[in-house]
Image (cartoon, rainbow, N blue to C red; front, side, top):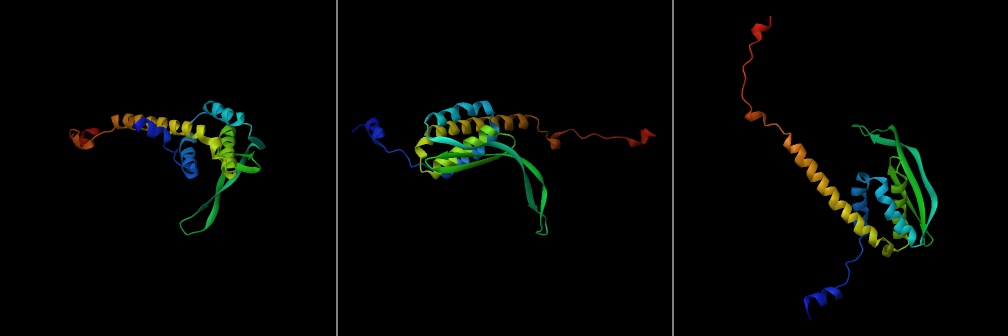
Length: 167
């Protein structure tokens, strides 16, 4: 048997829901709404999803703990929430900011995973992986640009300032 024949018979690695969630948490904030439309269209096209509750922006109280262990509310945070159904299960999505498409995507992923329909998310996994690579490239470029502005103070010429001449 040749190596190409054996690679065709190699089973696909098992679906890792936790890895998909980590990937989406990593890449979603960096991408614009217009890049999500084709992904959502692909999910809706299968006919398995229904929007249970349309995306709704709202304010959530942001609790924090002070250095003494006392919890208090720092303020309000704008967040968008949505609910999507899949095979009788409901998924919920929430994201900071007014981001209806992102909330719908998170809710659809949650619903598909709750319904045991990870097969519906295979294209999303590929897309999110590509987004992750792109985000890494952007981050590396930003780091290079920032490094170009770094100043080596130790290598700067020492100057002597005569403050006596100031008055």
